[in-house]
Length: 370
Image (cartoon, rainbow, N blue to C red; front, side, top):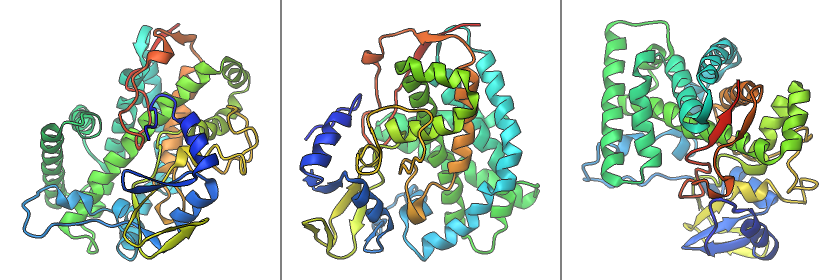
């Protein structure tokens, strides 16, 4: 079954209504809200990383992150990373995000690609600030991130990954020689992290928060322009920006489905028993339009409340950087919609990411007024 990238929702709706638990290409896809939520909570469904002993793979370490692990390793690593996204840190970054966003939006004039000129540079600059990387290195981080998440060219992905790992190792060594008051120094001197976990953790902080935020901003601007009455409503009442960001995550979020999970025992979803060892794919985009949970699920409503979407996951793997991603989307979208905006290309012809996991447009050409 082919799920269209530009508009997967009609196909996902049919799946949810007709075959809510269905096997596609060897994996079981879940599309009902209740099933997706349960899969993200049930200890009988988990994650695993397969490490091939004896295989020389310098990038193997970066797969051993809390993103891919179950408790107890996940619990330990998340506890060590969580302070980086605590209220005090996020509050400190709020003003910095506003400053970066204002500078980027000020540079938009006439025809501009909102992805290239706003959504892409913002999260890398913010994460560099959070971790303690020099701001001047943000361009290099952007190149490596783009190669790993957007190129789909194995040699290029590997080269970028190796360069990024070497960069992190160099920065860690510098902090051990000359400590600073930043997150990288605190992690470098943590007695609970070995070298591989440290490198993998920093790698994940940059990568996991990057493309998700890019697509949250891009999809948000796109949906507001597709729904001009809601854009006008938000302009009249800027206080709706927080609920508008939540609605973007529900209506057409930046992550189509979770990372593949695995049945750690035989597990039943409705009348279907998924055998132990099989892959399970909870489809967040489908769950977030389930009419059992969301009234008028195909209506984009910037004031929707309550909004119990699963766009950032659920349970122990709920996005650690959720608050930071929300801040960036709120700042970027809020600043941009204060300018006159219109499409500079047919929105029906926009290029979307080639897989459903990362869900967003590659470019978003707009005409931006003064």
